[in-house]
Length: 236
Image (cartoon, rainbow, N blue to C red; front, side, top):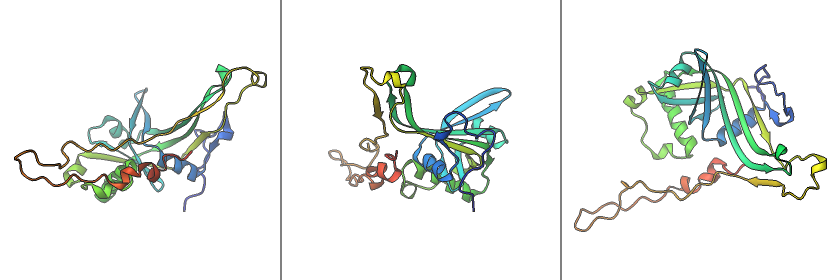
């Protein structure tokens, strides 16, 4: 059984604004589960690289995937040190002073060495987990990857063994002498809001005049209409 907190290392020791940081595994997991995009950083021959991608957390592991020829994933699979970050913006913090403007946010940084997933069953489950991370319930409502598709996909796993979270909440923090200034101050909340699902134009629909009868259009799945609630998208 894993410990309730990630170990503190030289890379994850919280320094500036340490009171906003946490090594708590549940806090880290909650932020990873709420995010949709991670940024993956690594170095090759002294050059830094950062690429955005989808991901999924399954237990104490984060999975990343892409084409077998993907340069970044090939580099990770070969054993490069990696830093994976996820950031959620919850609000713009507008202070009376330009100096004290900030943002309310939730973020995670993970460090480590990823390894390629070679077991076909684990690879399949990882890909389906990434699909479900996008829209919970979608994996069961889509065709599972074929053996050929699995062969063309590179999946790597990164253990959640070194990392930390950092969270800012609340109003602006102005200097005492600025609190009487006649400038509006406060927070502009931000959140990810899904729009109305747009069906694929190839979706079955009414028959054209004189054409063959078509099946009725498929109803919008409840996991899309309930997307925000299922993903906890409004969680602060």
